[in-house]
Amino acid sequence: MFTLRPYHQPDFDREPLRCAPNARFETVQADGVAPDHFHAMSIYPEYIKVNGQWLLAEESRMDCVAVLQDGRIAVREFRTLRKGEQVLVGRTENGEEGIYLHANGFRGEESAKDVFAFRGSRSRETAYSQDYNELYELLRYERDHGKIVWVMGPAFAFDRDARQAMSRLIEGGYVHAILAGNALATHDLEAAYLGTALGQDIYTHVSQPNGHYNHLETINRVRRWGSVERFIREEHIDNGILYACEKCGVPYVLGGSIRDDGPLPPVYADVYAAQDAMRNQLRTATTVICMATMLHTIATGNMTPSYRVTADGTVRQVYFYCVDVSEFAVNKLADRGSLSARGIVTNVQDFAVLLQKGLGLA
Image (cartoon, rainbow, N blue to C red; front, side, top):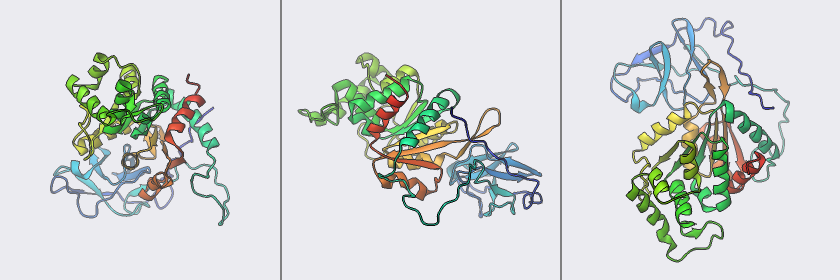
């Protein structure tokens, strides 16, 4: 039976936290510009001392700043700052400036490790059986007690079995939101509409005559109907990832890129509007699974803290998985500072099918 790892609050009655000063805030002088010596937030729980009380930044994200707002700590992007707001300043994190970063709040059993040991990193040689078993239990728990956000690249739309597996996961309640780009949605709808993805049959992977038109035909048809929902209804679409999302009421955010064809009507053309929409879904996420999309994965990793404060005030861990056939993509998050991510090096199409089977979804 899956149980969440308990969170251990800092002991504010011990030094150096007991006698720590109140944190300092300085006024924003121009929209979008933080004061000098601003404090940049991280993925970990950070406590700010205000009027003698340690306040937790409840919705943190890295590379942002803390704003004192109505007696609470709001974490904001630089671009959203407004003149007159109060921004946290200070570059230390041990309490001496009223700022404390609590990196080991979800500490587990510490085990002795040899200084020299083989296979310490995650690679294609790593055995992932235990990871899958833990993931099955986590997803069963989160289906009823949390929010599971999936970040997906277009690779799923190229294979019939992977599309079916993701559809079953959505219908089974294991998907609460999807973050993706124009490509995933386009090729998924192309597969449902014409049986191809980028002109290749989604089962045999054989290129079809004039198939390079198929994704453009699909985009154009969706734009003619004005929405994905109406396209699905009017064209009698009955399969696929977006079909399952529409049927089950699962939200999806499609962030555009400079190379997009079309794009589809729901795609965000403004990158910052897309970022805001993604973050709105991630604010309440408790498990995030990123698959075969390095740039969306890094963006999501930067926006996702290692913890979440629930409605009853409980601080709980956020689980973050990065799945890709490329070791570089899997390990890139650690290089970017998202140290709480768990990597699985595998073909994402096989990964989805294994999850479907492991969770008992027909």
